[in-house]
Length: 279
Image (cartoon, rainbow, N blue to C red; front, side, top):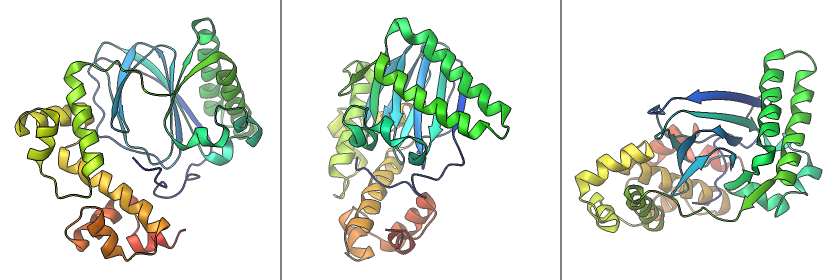
């Protein structure tokens, strides 16, 4: 999936947000989504399953995931309760000196990243996240700066005390591996006129079974996911090429330019023309 700009920019967040929630087994997210800001997701205990960038990943206690702006993701809670924390922030909230200490430095922030806290340090990380949540509740004149400082400290703790993973571990369940194959087929062939039968054949399922399984695992239908992928690539082309909007729509798999314009505005809140003017 391309590194597509977020609908209203990386900095579209009013301050730093931190929250901790206990999700019970079977909790269902209303729908998959993406954010116009960074999200740092941490599992304190329990487990959950992420669908993100055409991959499934089972997260458990001590696991972090950094989600850049504009990246589609969906979470399921299958094997019991999960206590998880999130920290949401804009690029401007992260100090340049801290970024320079990250693996790959600036490039670290351009794609989904996984890292694991060593067990000896997990209580300290949970306590630090709790401080951030409490600071947000205080919300006095010093809170904004305190949260900024705590965000830098959190990343420094992770740099020192976490194991950074270069790729997704291969630990998804067999019943979801075919869903990953379907998602990857869509991402590879989004520009073609593919059908649900084509996608099902790539996954090794019947079309009806894949439709039900895909929605359960990904949180959206196959057609909706295909449109989402096409729109992401179209958004990238709008700001990196001077081709006409109609040419881009057709090249990204849309057969109707008016449908493309309507779908684009629904997702990004701007017409393709207005989106292009932002570059």
